[in-house]
Image 1 (cartoon, rainbow, N blue to C red):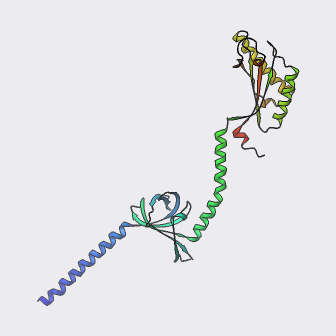
Image 2 (image 1 turned 60 degrees about the horizontal axis):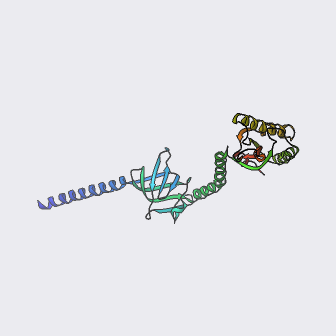
Image 3 (image 1 turned 30 degrees about the vertical axis):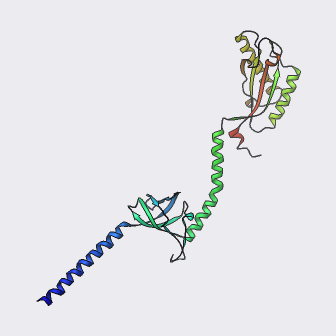
Length: 265
């Protein structure tokens, strides 16, 4: 009877052992994840891979991660490489452990042809990025003005009339403006400290208007380039009493840095 029981017991033990082995293998397979997709970002030890369903996965690499570059139609021939080749746009197959959204990579494979194409695309993108950077800088600089030249013309006490010297100085200023792309002229009128504040405000405005009119009507500057003059009242450097140097209009030749940056020489 014992000779019949022993084979049955042995068979049961073998069956249990097989079941345990199968369960262990299934558990190992369940813990191992395979992911196919395209790299969209590389940040330190983490790469982002987007699969065909447009789901993004965070893939963590380490010193133990193996990188294989496959060759040939069957992708059987391969050579090991390192993480430095990883770049956005590269199609990869990742194997590792994790839940699929956060994956610790044990192996990353990619085709040699795909790596070559990705590098070509990256090389072609470099000028585009530089152009985008320049465009962003221009956008930041719109409304920021750079002064290229300035002229000061002075007036007699209580007067807004231009002297012959003032006209000659404005002609020279206008000639330089005409040689400048996308220029603008900004005008500020001032007075000395004599007289009351209201009268000085009016007089400073009249002086700025006189210069604007001359530049447009006599010196040949386009009306759209000459901004309406600002009456600033008493000049900051007027001091006390009559001061001929304070009875003036300051004309500034400026360019918008955002506009000027887009002008080819």
